[in-house]
Length: 468
Ligand code: FRU
Image (cartoon, rainbow, N blue to C red; front, top):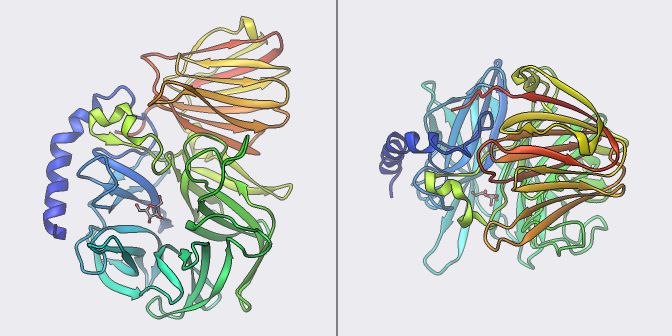
């Protein structure tokens, strides 16, 4: 399909699909979700002239991974987002099978998108071009074409450019799968965004003492934070362990030091960014006030997508809440963006034995919990959280099989901040030391019920809906 027909069909799908999506009781009240079709990665996250732009991988025509366009939202407060016209749609010879993930920078005063043009051939093989598009002034983006074909030595899986400016150059990290099926992150530089030079592999399977670590690394993001450099990456192909790497694919980070001249990144161990069921392909932006903000996809590729009940309402997946990043004790700390406090309604506070805690409604709510011993929390019928003094365990029924499935975080829990939004929960552990994110699909008016002998303190706020 050519670009124009796709955009026309998307407009038709939106007009007929929005009323149906809005009837869905699981539709988020304050998270970003597509009006119709499938959303995956956050793309092009940037703040420019006081305005936040968040683009996203979007199939407007169905709840499957085809027709990948860039959807576009804009906001001045990180809370209220306006839908913008489709920014990119596939159809050119260099992006015929999808305008895949990428990033945004401001060049010559203009918002400029750097994305992967994905091209598939009838024999099943593929190639990828890194491409540019620029704001043409009317909220539309004009494609400027490919600026980088596949580098030699890599498979057709080279994608997801994240570009930033350092001193007098542009730099790019790219996710790649080499010809020996090892996942890599490539570093490139350019004077003008148009001609790029490959500087080397800065991280990946078999590099920097990390051992065999996946066949493909997607969605890299490299940035300075509190005196160090953080490389976010999504390795595919890690073996499951008892309490880690339990999702189909992982999103995590490496902390280290980047030597731009030697194109070398010395780093510590890989850590998962989120210990929950759904979290992938995060992307960060530097806010104008100096904060490093992150959005993630509250989903994972190939993970139970066909069983999500929201498909009946014509839409699938949503973003995480915006998070603020910092380094604490050598690890990444993630907290809900402070703007989210403005959604809080009247607070209810309670203290006592967990068994005696009053039930509270979770529909769209924030809960802060300070436990003094083991406890269990049931979120409606759909999900439970249990802490036994050593292990925090999140349990839900698998959407397909109905069997219980678990995710874990091991350690002393001193504080939990839980953000609920109809069909999602994000659990911030010990003021940002770890996070567990998950979708869940409760019945109407799900209640939180606590149990356990230990004492605890609870604070509960309803959160005001702010998204359509
Ligand atoms: C990650 C990803 C990216 C790719 C995009 C396509 O979820 O596979 O690597 O660019 O999704 O939608």
